Image 1 (tube, protein in one colour):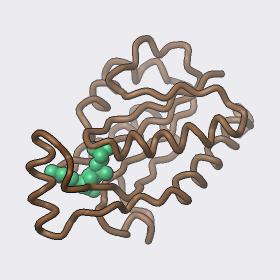
Image 2 (cartoon, rainbow, N blue to C red):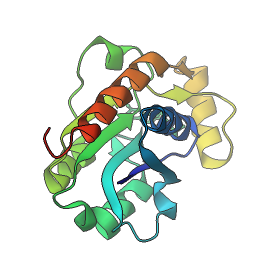
Image 3 (tube, rainbow, N blue to C red):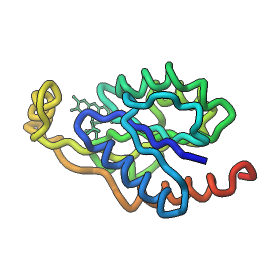
Image 4 (cartoon, protein in one colour):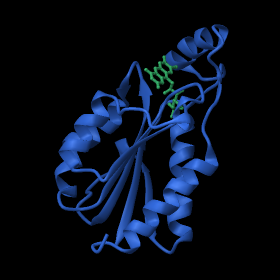
Length: 169
Ligand SMILES: Cc1cc2nc3c(=O)[nH]c(=O)nc-3n(C[C@H](O)[C@H](O)[C@H](O)COP(=O)(O)O)c2cc1C
């Protein structure tokens, strides 16, 4: 089966994180398509989904929300995992954070096996609308990279193992 790893990202941090996940899945022998959520065409041929979003103002990225309304139905009965990347501190690594409202809805609609929150990244170097807000947040001391590649990769290896044992798992 082909596994789709799709993500919504404005500053690139979640996209890179999705790339780590795709790498681990490929290393385990799976065939993987890595794609921004806004660029996915027909999704019917994918056998499993890992969908992740940056969190802005407590919500999921608009590309991910559009992906869900256009393609969510095509993953009925297929294994789905979800992740958010947001907190600009170490809270995501210190314990399981509750899913935000969009993540909760998606867990329900897709009957997802799991939702996990990973730390986020924000630099003062972002451009456009994001740059303006990011620079302000950076001045307030919120900049930094709180993604944890080891944790992300270890989660991805666990997901890969579950996909390999599907449908038995
Ligand atoms: C304007 C703004 C609002 C944000 N709001 C939240 C939020 O509500 N919750 C959260 O966990 N992270 C929030 N973040 C942090 C982002 O989710 C984090 O920087 C994330 O890694 C961005 O991912 P991206 O680079 O893929 O766009 C916010 C960041 C910015 C710049």
